[in-house]
Image 1 (cartoon, protein in one colour):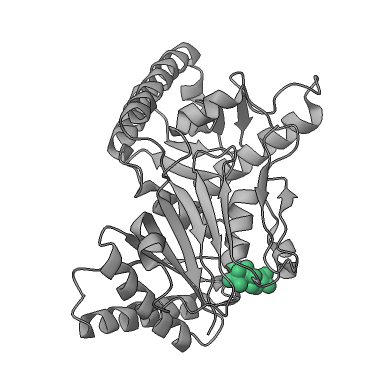
Image 2: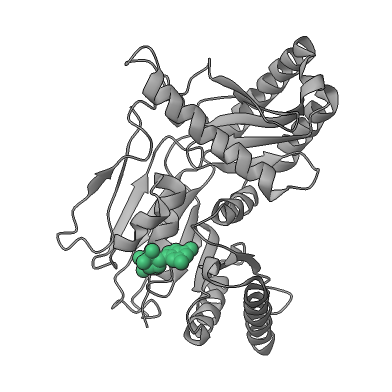
Length: 369
Ligand code: GDP
């Protein structure tokens, strides 16, 4: 059974709650394989999630990694205790949660920024686009410059968040405004060109948060070009429309072939994963059996002649592709190529395990002004 422990923000006792990150029946093989596949759980590079209080950090974390429905985030409270929490769950993405109470001044000299930023892979700064974001921009600038001083290798990401409440025009306007101001501030500090944050429009009420997280995580995967290459080969050999390599638990796609990503296809693939796992959990004939295992595969025919096809790759990853119905008839070809693809993926991660250790981890830092 794969469950994860995490602390809920605002818990006055500071105790840990167990939260099901996946349906209880979700299960897969023995635990050694988990550790093996991520190369151990020590020394994980971190993704820090930062931003002003109430910008949506905890909601993002819970929706992406814990299958919380967006409406349930309305009841999340703010952080009241420092919590550092390793989450070693069934996801391919290993992450670490850092929750800080608002009253701690992050820029206090006693605060160990070396430790916070030193091993950090990505820093995501969340800005609430529905609110007045002037204060957030000041804090963004302080945070970026401070983090850059400590670690120049951090990938800086800015989530312009809660855009579900904005019209399309206001969304683009907010993005342009935030991007221009942030870049100007960096130029004034003489850091333009050195420190180039990426900007994403996100919301937990649609797939944009998963899409953004996918792109953040992909930047941390050194084998990305190899994975893309393998997917390209698979797509061209089988005549697929599109292929994604998904982290099943978080629905982050860790790689895709080089044709452009259309949001609708991505959403369909995400929904397919949910359907497959849910149906497997509810209707699996053996209660003890796994909801996702080596046998996991699914075919969904859409009315427009396209087939959604899911296959297990390893305990974390699934291949989900879109195939035209007439192409899907060449089952033998697809089966053979998929087999080769699966073997190659295994080899890629075998090499990573031997040479590098784990992939990534996620931390959350919450501050208050
Ligand atoms: P934190 O203090 O940064 O961890 O913020 P929370 O995660 O507690 O979120 C604060 C509030 O913002 C909650 O009521 C969430 O329901 C809401 N929220 C988070 N993400 C979104 C979003 O994408 N859209 C909208 N409309 N509200 C959101």
